[in-house]
Amino acid sequence: MIMIERLIEQALLEDIFTGDITTKALLPQRCPAEARLIAKEDLVVAGVIIAGRVFARLDPDVIFNPRHPDGESVPKGTVLATVSGNAADLLMGERVALNLLQRMCGIATLTLRFVEAVSGTKARIVDTRKTTPGLREIEKYAVRIGGGINHRTGLYDGVLIKENHIIAAGGITEAIRRARAYIPHTLKIEIETETLTQVDEALTAGADIIMLDNMNLDEMRSAVATVNGRALVEASGGVNLDTVRAIAETGVDIISVGALTHSPRAMDISMLLD
Image 1 (cartoon, rainbow, N blue to C red):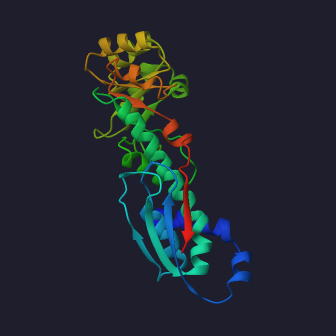
Image 2: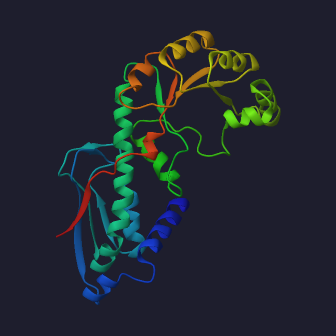
Image 3: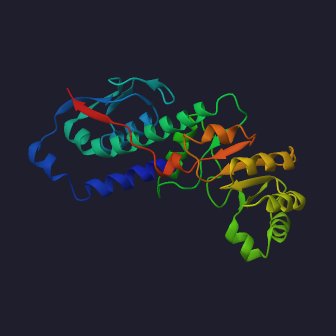
């Protein structure tokens, strides 16, 4: 919550800065108001409490009542929450609250579509680090709300050896050897591969997770057969709603989808004063 409060404060500072000129001109005195946050399309709710924290940051006495919990799928026209307090504070917090709520609902809604697309297979949908700067914590939370799984949060909580690491270290085997010598026993090593030859080398070198980067379906099936349960297999690159089912049916364990956080469509949500 400390990180989220900082995020909210920064977002409000960016938007309000020295003051809301319009609201100051029209509402120089405190006056009570109540508003509804309304879904303008079908969506998965995510971030409703965070929207409430935006208003609370401006007015500690605000009353925020969420109507639907995070994770619930709701139809167009649903009142997601009501908020009452000083009218000026509600108006000043409106855009920031909606921006965060719309984006989080968008991520959760898109994630659920991917999760449903691979239903019945063993594949798990995971996110990536392709997040909006400063919003990673809430964007990854929204992925979880949509039924997805978080990959590593940052560079500090997991080993993922990618193409440039391999080049810098002098090869797959040497990169894995160095990583294994450096990390504690509690961490696993994941490595990116682009060919079946690299898959063989990564497996022999002791990788715990082998990422198949931009491989075609036949290559994925061959890789899964080669690994044969000795490591987890992750598919990555070019994953979309049209391709994800076929990828899942190759037998991979994990499918990472950058689109969950780098290009979701913000859901249409409005705030209306009563």
